[in-house]
Length: 116
Image (cartoon, rainbow, N blue to C red; front, side, top):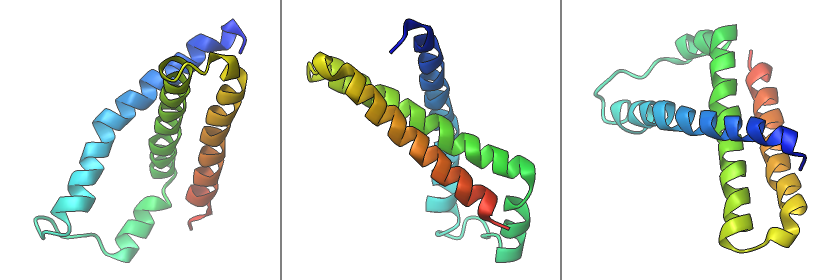
């Protein structure tokens, strides 16, 4: 990896951590507790569909997928690199982890923009 891209990867890592810490608990609370336990009424299909097809919601969902995937990739890369002492495989690990994050992002974007 060129040193010029390292700050960008750390930016993706930090942003993914922030998105995960701030947004995931809200989704878990709503989808995992509030709707199933009847604390809040779950939206019907048409309301949810009209929300999801809005461009701002699609952008939100893209951010919700993109940044945490790169957070995972960066954390997993350095876990393998530093924790398991696989420094001799640094380039291979970087390509695999960030590649999987890119594939997940592309699949997520395809699914998000395919709804409609």
